[in-house]
Amino acid sequence: MNNTAMIKSDHVESQANPDVDLVVNFINRVWNGKKLAELYDYLQYDFVDHSMPHASVQNKEGLLLYLRELARTVSHTTEIVGLTTLGELVICHIRIRVTALPTQADICCGTEVFYGYRTFRMSDGKIAEHWEIF
Picture 1: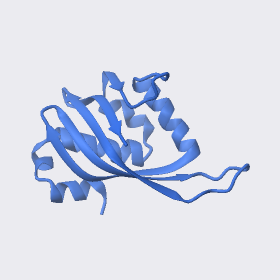
Picture 2: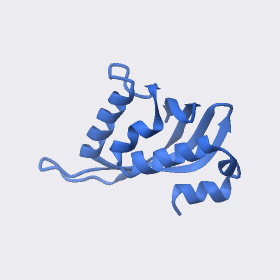
Picture 3: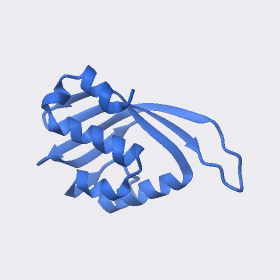
Picture 4: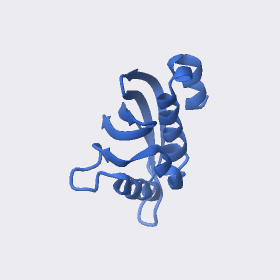
């Protein structure tokens, strides 16, 4: 079952909350689908990503650079296993599966699974801020 179907059937709030649908679509299309050209469709012009390493650029451009580099080094899938809202926040309990991509220098290792949370602050129908906890 894909994330969107799971959330629509298990979480009634998704049917009445366009912010939830936007976050689910963002995770499915940009993170999982690697449709990086769509990144700017989901994010506010002054978006801040608090999950980025402190020394990196923590805006849309920094997130785009991070996602491009991530796609070069690992295969990853984010699955939403739970979801709730609190005011302007959309909070996702997630499971991430990560597998290193093989390179000429090493042999591909197994898949690792991480559980954590992604929190999105919404503003005017777009994502204004993002945090993650693992």
